[in-house]
Length: 157
Image (cartoon, rainbow, N blue to C red; front, side):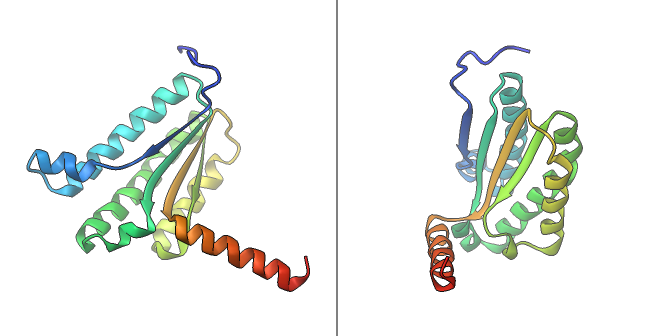
């Protein structure tokens, strides 16, 4: 296993963008681009783990992505569920801890359960911490934080 050539490099974040354009250039459906991008993510995570990068964050699906065509959103949700289910054992066996952040309530019960299972199955791992931003957004995050602060003020804490 090669060492991290830059030991100070401990956290890498990726914005998962451009998969639809990649597919369009090849006259493929957008879903094919998303599938190709997901496969690349697996390779990226493996490479980061091999190089002792401790933290990887994937910005995968923002709140704005719900406005995409319904067939594309459906394909993205199917892909998310597929990888949650198929990669949990690999993550667990390779010391990768998964955390998903963002508002999970918009996801199907099946996806929410798969997230919970993947997180609990990998909770004891510490080789690489993989965070996936799913249904996140800057405006939503600020609004949620403001509501939480207001609730604490109202409670007197």
